[in-house]
Image 1 (cartoon, rainbow, N blue to C red):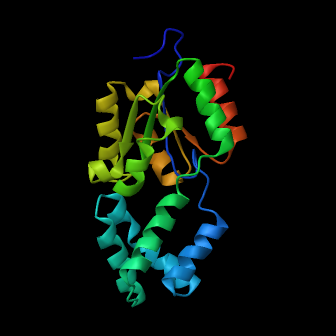
Image 2 (cartoon, rainbow, N blue to C red):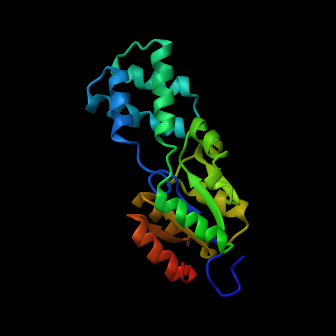
Image 3 (cartoon, rainbow, N blue to C red):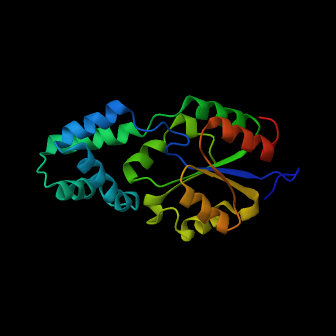
Length: 207
């Protein structure tokens, strides 16, 4: 339900590269080294298989798919190192994001998360101290569907029990923001912490 002053009742955040830092250059270089493939070829294969991983396929199946595209024959140790490096690379929270979450939690703002993420990353995030104040965490791997599919947003609104107009959604991908907006959700296309602070101050009041 809406707050008494008419402000949105819930802030729904994306995770990757909104709350989190992007994978570091060091992590990216390590994945490339472990793969043994040219940089461009590795990342093309990595992203081509990612949607299935985000929808819930097993890590072994994901890395098998990447290997198949590259014509690679990785041993078990290399597969594990690729998996561990990849998962770890997405777990670093941006300092500005952590501070913002602290401020929102202190004022009693209802927080929720909607992330395209595989089971391996989602499992770690469920135990994140920084996300402890969140009322709900929604992950594509559990829904077998990914943003920007409309069913993802309608599921989240139903589970939150909140009208679209009472939710603010923050995401860094334009297609995800546009899909939410079509359902009547108030949105912010994330491009940095300063713009997000200004947007939330406009919607919620002084931060």
